[in-house]
Image 1 (cartoon, rainbow, N blue to C red):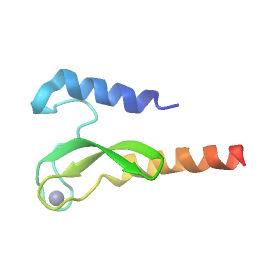
Image 2 (image 1 turned 45 degrees about the vertical axis):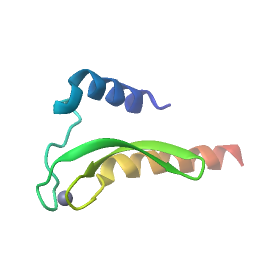
Image 3 (image 1 turned 90 degrees about the vertical axis):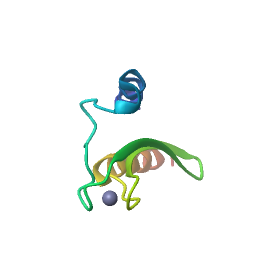
Image 4 (image 1 turned 120 degrees about the horizontal axis):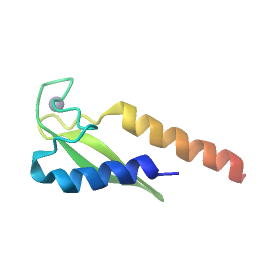
Length: 78
Ligand SMILES: [Zn+2]
């Protein structure tokens, strides 16, 4: 289920601090600052997303995807 997330994380590690993987958005859409790939934890949920070092903006597409995943799983579980 989190194949893409793991793949992204692996690529990030391989790329080192340069972070020039295919998933790297490069610059913040808001302020053009540098983005870092970070692990986030909200209660029991753990997900990875790009965060801007400058303004703290989080890449919505990644976060949204993970949220949808978690929500759909919860629906199935209940
Ligand atoms: Zn920013």
